[in-house]
Amino acid sequence: MAHTLQERYSALVLAKLRKELVLKDGVVFNNDYEGSPSAGAVKIPVRDTEVQVSDYDKANGIAGSTGTTGYETMNIGKDKAVNEIIEGYDAQSVPDKLVAERLDSAGYSLAKQVDTDGGNTLLAGATISGVASLTKDNIYGTIVDIRTAMNKANIPAANRYLLVTPDTMSLILKSPEYIAASNLGDEVKQTGAVGKIAGFLVIEWNDSTANLAMLAGHPRFATRAMEFSVPIKLQSLDGSGKYIGAAAVQGRNVYDHKVLRSVAIRAVFTPAFLALTKAVGTSAAGDTKVTATVLTGGDTLAYKKNPATTCAYGTASTAYNGTSMTSGTAKAISGCSVGDIIEVVEFDSNGKAVAVGYVTLTAADIKA
Image 1 (cartoon, one colour):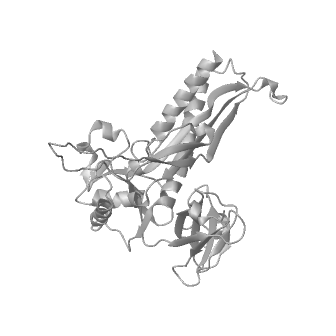
Image 2 (image 1 turned 120 degrees about the horizontal axis):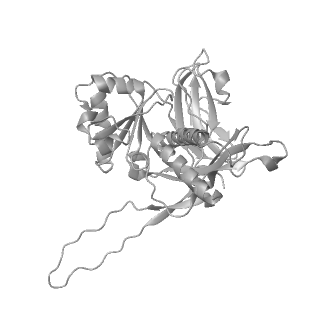
Image 3 (image 1 turned 120 degrees about the vertical axis):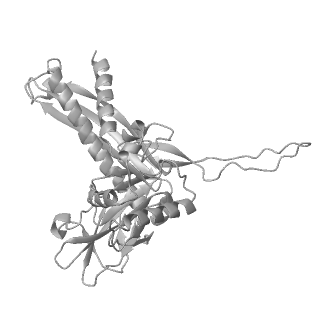
């Protein structure tokens, strides 16, 4: 019975999690991988070449061509857990209504965390551009420019998405070129899309990253791997030696994200963003170097490795609590691993965040 409940609870939480995700599977991320995330790594099939087309000879036929699919290893670095004590009940007598409420909350909280980490990965792996200003009159032209860049990079036209911040969404809604959600099919609306413009499904994304306006992409080129390593369950705490007649909702969820092609994910910042460069470290194993130059003379820089959340515009440098770095000088960062995200923030003379930049580290950036 306990095992049956465990499977049922996990299914309910997973359904809630998927419903609450803004960065949904099949819309923003694909789930094309082999292996089990709980094992610590999965394999992602990678093939950039298409099937070869040749002239056909009616007399002699055609020689068979061969195609190869390579595999990238995606390490699973996120291991999140829920452990909420329900005081006053043992595992067998917790009211169904209370169980349902706690499971619903667990699904919502996990979805919020998965979205945060997924957004960080997209921003760190994207091709970044800046626009001096966005208005209702130039928002459509800016989106068309993104479309053109993706066309030139041979990104499939079907299923492209556009994640927009609330401020940018306001401009889109005021744009005469916007196509209202009423023209979309019910199935598309259920993904969270609120409209379509220039071929992109438009999804409002309440992200506060400094100066971020929107992020465009295609689900083929970003992967999410996720599963419960310990299924959600009601756990009696009677044997803990501390809690008497209590139970807890417990479970662990492992997951990670990976951008497969930078040109397929495009982030637009306004009015400015920090351009970062990275290089292999020269001291100990695990070292890398990151360089950034302030946009305004007199401003300061600070960085974080794998930030829990992206830095919002106006965040105080004291609240950010990052590690300082010198503008224009390579900063040595130790203890790095492939897939680590480096966030660099520019703070103005008042100590407020005014710009950000992101890079994802590869094996070529880290001293072996």
